[in-house]
Length: 97
Image 1 (tube, rainbow, N blue to C red):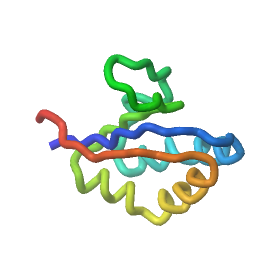
Image 2: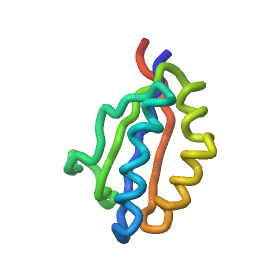
Image 3: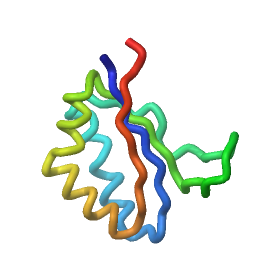
């Protein structure tokens, strides 16, 4: 069953972004993931929570691939970099296979 990592990001500074975004697409691909949404221009449809600066959806063949990506040493190293200038809310959900 496909799995998706869905995230919403608040960006506090941009110092980390060039290095992070230069590395993250290839890492996602190595874990058989595909970005379905990246960045976007979030627009409120309903609710009152603050809008994120960016949003993403990454599709993986299954939860094992998604978790392997998320828990990999390379991603966790990039996550430390990302946290230096942003706050991320993310969830893992199953697709409708």
